[in-house]
Image (cartoon, rainbow, N blue to C red; front, side):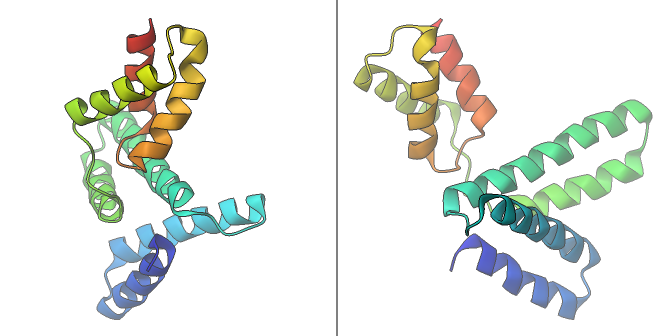
Length: 147
């Protein structure tokens, strides 16, 4: 069962249980997936689905930062609950050591030695980690390795 089917099934069970936060989050995520599918003109593969989930988490984390500045603790609590729901569909995140090992392997395999090859390295690393690390985190580590 892919992530989209899992989300759809969990939406039905959340509706039966009247879990408002879970329903709201799953509906928003499914809406983002549908929008991306319409834009692309086809169903998304699992990597793209994971990227959408990561984007949803990142958006909420940015909103939490803004809410902290504005002094809105009630909003922060709800957003943290939403992040927890979304993270339930993401694979376990890699630790830094594991990610750095993969990045070092890719850099040596591609014989990358300058920042000009950063795009190639990032593309290969993203395909290998399969959603277990955020793209911005990968980019930051690759940039420091190639600088």
